[in-house]
Picture (cartoon, rainbow, N blue to C red):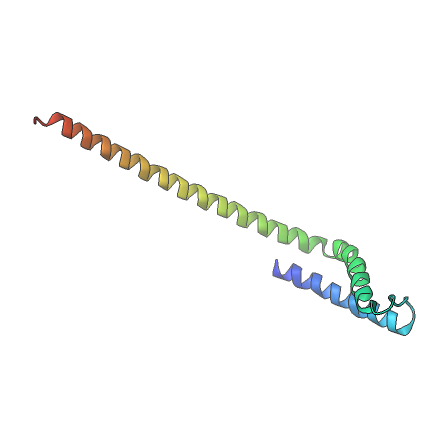
Length: 108
């Protein structure tokens, strides 16, 4: 997961550098007034998104498999804890019923 995030960030930084170079060399248009920095960032995001979608497909699939495995493990752990709690509750109920039975069977 960290690898995918770092690769995605790398693509964004590369696009940012390319767009910055294109804007300051006059190839791409400048932003209006003082919005040039925002223009460069937005244009970089728009360009890097489809590139990341295509280039990082295999890495994204690997990351999603890892996430699914973690979720499945968490669900299994929760179910194991839940069954342990159920067993403890059942045992406490049996002990209470046995104590009541013993109390009723003893003469007063």
